[in-house]
Image 1 (cartoon, rainbow over the protein chains, first blue to last red):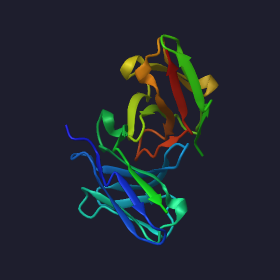
Image 2 (image 1 turned 30 degrees about the vertical axis):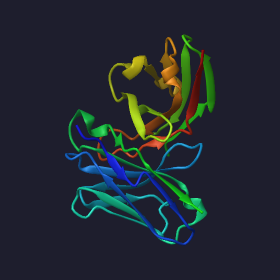
Image 3 (image 1 turned 180 degrees about the vertical axis):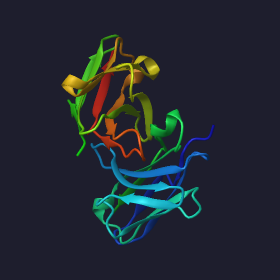
Image 4 (image 1 turned 90 degrees about the vertical axis):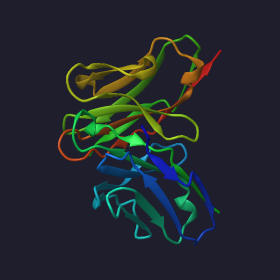
Length: 116
Length: 115
């Protein structure tokens, strides 16, 4: 059973550059979530997709952030004009829409972003 | 709005001792509650969950948690700590049935296990 995968695992970038992260959910999962985790804190919700539709965005997701899930499979999260405050672990999770596991989210290993 | 409070950002126990990690939640609707574990530089792994039914839930690696509505608590316990339990533990709440389940996490508790 292939879990949630994320790429890259680590990204170091200079302030002002754009970065893009990819998440591949578990294949039969329709729901996909992005979270951000800063040092010493729990993950914070960023956005949610059901299939290709982005149904909720947190106010944490400023206009420099954009997420897509074009075919309802993998998702990308792009940050434009990165700032040092964007340094964090970006976590992706997926879950099915039906069944007993519909409330369980399965997390990927995360992408750690460092903005210098 | 829902929220989660984890009492104690760091907990240290001896190997073989009882592990108790505290979690209190705030929710205006019947909550679904979760405990996740995170090892260094890894994602989160689900330890156990409470949705409905039995209030004492058992999870992986010998952990269990009890939902106490009157105390709005969902504390995590393990009778005997093992060195491999050293990790960060997160309690989370979601709105539960109907629609999707955005998770609200606590700040986490780092568990250290010493010989």
